[in-house]
Image (cartoon, rainbow, N blue to C red; front, top):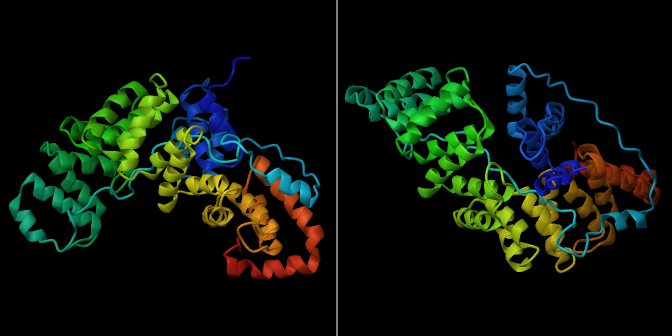
Length: 417
């Protein structure tokens, strides 16, 4: 049997541990046949898992597949058998490996962040003289009028009216109008979502040199939205946007070269593009750099993980917490708690282990029990199984009264759900 490509193996490892970004990436790989044989049932399975955890793109992709006549009924997952485990064995199962790899962290590279949900603006906002704009009767004024109606600045909010003004500007070959109209079709604002129309107007604006349009166009081509998926063509548009300093395009090029999607795998180019994006503040690039570097330059990796963690990137907070457990348990507990509160079930497990032992944080078996319950409830596969064993082991130690007291504390810790 042929060995599974490294990138797919990394996605699978993280996906089976419950990491929703990896679940989405694995689903997309099966959907598009990237590095694996196209498999619609596997794509549906992993996309449903990602959607169940709130991944914003997974649900939209499933809807797109359904519109194409594909059965998106989720397959039944086989339950993991529950086993009993002593508290000591539980702690052994949570202990990270000594090396940088296999430490339980998120190894799979992140894909490009979602596009800004409101990518258009009003050039700083403020009051809008709608009458003056209508009198000006120029493409720039029409775009400004579209913005005004879209955001309710100086007029009642009316996305349909916004579309009409953007359309007028777009048909007059104004690149800002073309980009704005593409966004409306892309996101279904004021008009029925239409990938073909979005692609058409992104292409028009991209050819006119609009960097954001070039980036969004590349994303659509890479994902096969409105056209057949083609990573090589997407790469060309990413490069045009990156040449203009578009940070997300720089990141996406790094991801293409790391994964070898439509291009030859090139870790040197991947690192270079990631560094450029990281310098511009892209948290996902900082995270991926941490993953690339941690096997050969741990200090640099920790620095990039810290930068991404401070921006709130949950995956970076998890990896930073795991890597610091031996050298700085107090900082490890801080970052693991941040990641756990953001919903990371692997962080919940490892935070529980620190709370049980009192390393880097006050010993607190009651709080550990609550985090293990959360990990069992929201985790999948191995994570849920380990958490279930932990709940069983701590139940023996705490007794019914201790568990009842712990659950009374849950609302104070924000762990009621």
